[in-house]
Image 1 (tube, rainbow, N blue to C red):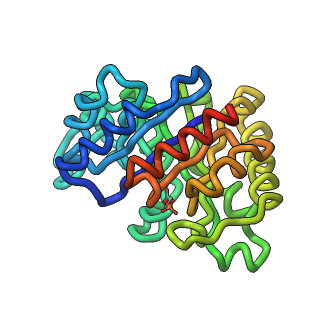
Image 2: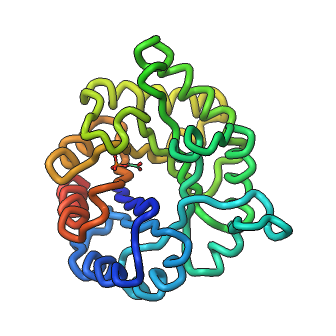
Length: 246
Ligand code: PGA
């Protein structure tokens, strides 16, 4: 079971202590994989702070190129050099807030692979798309547009309905299970059987009180957690729920 904390644009050096508390309080469980993705300025220090613990460090985005005249950007190689092992790509706050399209995200996934990072690819429909009956098509388009063969080592997919992120609303259990099955079907049909083993995480208003239920659903390989990853207590509660169900 994967539990990934996405701190988004939250976190100062003082919050490294909180990450350390997560490392110290983690249940020892072979089937549990835990990661924290802080903002770039904390990535190196967080990797150092978590060294020797079972918590890995990841980034929240990268540029497609390895280096160059790209003011304000950070490459996958720099992220790898900072001690991180993974990078979140295609988060809805970048797709919708910053206009990132599937072609750009596909190049970023390739950059992560080039640098030896695990890509955590986010997909998910808006509320309008769900209401219009287009949720499955939207997610299929995002998957086929953002990935290429062969399957990237360690690839994780996160299904995050845009309308569930930070809202306290979640899809029904049946809707989550149905979409996760759809994602697996699309991956296998488009890219081949090797993609059938890719873990599919759920994200969007995951909290200690719903995490265990969501992770018990068919086809759910873990959770991507925003708000509830910002306190050691709530994030650890979700990790414990994951260990109990793993
Ligand atoms: P949330 O965010 O848990 O605060 O809804 C999830 C995410 O955006 O990854």
